[in-house]
Image (cartoon, rainbow, N blue to C red; front, side):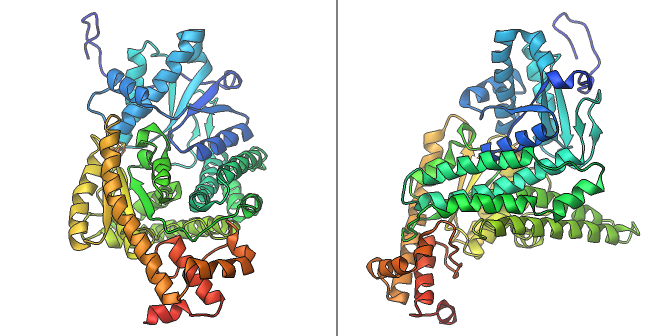
Length: 515
Ligand code: SF4
């Protein structure tokens, strides 16, 4: 490497200055990259363990431009967004207190892995951008996504241990189910703003619960406590009571749009994905958001796949597979307990081996990087199981895994021409073009939702006018937390009519399936 003065230097991997125990009380840990509910909950987990922490503001288009300016020009768009986001935050702080104080006062904690895509290089982009900005002394620490307990970060001030990792995982699971409930309720709320108010109150409440989480030391005790406690289930029951008071009108045929795509773009809510969640709702859709829990489950499936390759070579390979699969079952059980506390209204997480099976003809499960074969698997799963009318896939520019998925989806759509698929390329500066493409497919999805509703009316013999007295006779069906079963049709309105026919004894939806 040649420096500005022309001298030669050897390349050295990034190595942050130590963060000591004496310093940690004066240091604020920065992090980001998730949706706001999960970020607030994770901050509470840090506070529970005695750290000061803050989530960065949601990245903006200005951050994207900064990331492009200060780091590698060829990097994928999430890298540019997150790099620019960190750098702009620190630059603003440096203007107030100076670069030396910024390097002393803040550290950044980010997830890392070995790749196979740009994800393995995020921290190097941050380092390059910070050096270019004159903040080379700033410390970035990596949370290895494949290790639950990685001990103390360099210097001993920050412990990335089981209580921290498990706290973050449970914070994510609780806010995942809350987000799922929120998106199932808001499109149908009778009083505008009621859902947003309940979500704000629920996040505040969950943060308080996480801040007061009992401490368990060691490796296995925290794990056993998190798996067996009713602490989080009770907290979510309290959250459910906040939603109980929301009145909904489900007799509105709306297209259900499943969000898939690259992890960062599908998770955040803001400029990095053109505010697609809110935009879809404003266009009359019900959004089926991407859950972070599915990524954690995929990560465990990846271990199983690695061990599968060693069956016959490593004598313990089968035992290792069984151990990870047991962990996966416990994970699903935990997720379903949390869903259950919210009346089973949040969406379920699909079985990873079913996703792999569905994707197999189009995308090899050993192609890692990004979401791997999951994009194809999730699209087919949602389509074949009537979970969504349409798939909206958020694809970053310069992303190798997503480009491969979009290519593979051409084969999927060839075999399943009735699958409505809108791949949206996110460039940061082509919002009108991307949303207009999405709108074209959404128009077709709306027609399907209405067709389905009309068919349900014909089959049940119930018009909306006939249905209303049935709803009034059972006021609990107006509650946001009342669970309407899934009768093999996608839309909430069609399912509601079939349900009313069933509970009023007019017709049994099972007869419809048989017919
Ligand atoms: S999956 Fe794509 S967008 Fe995400 S980090 Fe990897 S290369 Fe970048």
